[in-house]
Image (tube, rainbow, N blue to C red):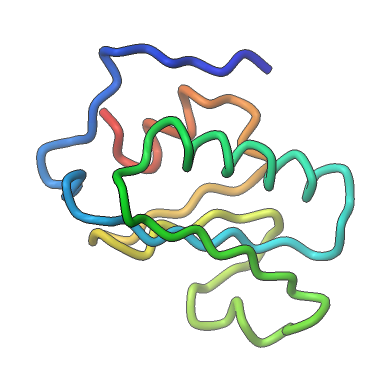
Length: 106
């Protein structure tokens, strides 16, 4: 996967990019897809999220009820909790451009 550090990638005007973001990544065990999603969410965190942002990694094997509030039906799933509106993306987040777009960086 190629990671884009494109300087033209910016948040949508309503995304609240200047405020810290909260993203939850739901996984189920340390499978290859889970490991890829963790790696990719950490890249997103270091390269794109504003200072003070928080990324939570939640293993549903240890806490099966944790995904209920965020309506997680597939894994891995990343949920942008804040800023609102909430956004979800399912998969290992391998396509960083698409991940950035879905999470509101356009």
